[in-house]
Length: 411
Image (cartoon, rainbow, N blue to C red; front, side):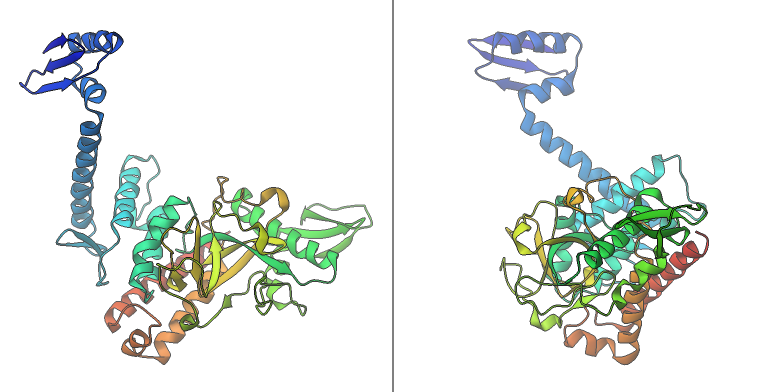
């Protein structure tokens, strides 16, 4: 390996005969390169002299590794994956995965192989795999091809969490319709503490109670007795699951004031009433956002919502952190100090949406039972047009439903 410097131009001749030249080089850079030449550190020499080439080499190496890993996954999991041409497919679903989602499967598989935690039944039964797999199952049912292609990129870009059930969590603001501050505070307390117990503490919410003392709500473990003269409100899990059944309306939208938003109850509009073009940034539909979006002017209450990928109408190009959907389910009222923070924290959302997932699978099961795959497809309700594909997806989602219910039983 040799190095030459002439009037600010440095030329390095590598051991394989490759010649690298750079002009306008400083004396400091020359001295640094001299040391690297002596140690024959070819990689660092290239990084200093031709960083753009190194970047392309890294991309090539990463792509080569991804292709090799995809073929390894297909070989080891032939009932799960298949490759056609240059695309990765989920077995039984005639839709190629978006490239970024396929690469995430590769990354998840790599992490599984190098992890000390191994699942007895293999990679396909690990939580990270099931989250991605269920996400793609729901995505494949979305009749909008652009939404299927755009959604995972959007969620990754904005660091939005995908649950084990394949749903994703987002923000929005709503308008409180409660005439009583106590009622609003109670809804906020119940939903907020439920999320905290499930995602941060990883505890069974049925083991906690809500009490009221001196006009303040308290969370207490069922085994803890209190000598104070407080008021027992109820079991945390029962209270949370009963929130949709409150007689009074909880929240509405700031735009039309016609929507009935309740914690734990799905809000939905007919899909055809929403704008499904990703070229239009602000249009008809239910809007949800990432933490990057400033939605402070769209209501007085911040909520966290769960969204089924099947229901996404559009991921507008050029929109900074907002998308349109035809349905979402509010899961918690966010306290002021948690707004735009709760999704940034390292919370485990894998066991969060048990009841929500059951409802989503039941709705899909009803659709399949009452309509043919062709009818669902031509009416732009679902994206797949094959009965076998539809049943592949439903069977997989029902299997996950059994897994989830078993997990709930053993909590």
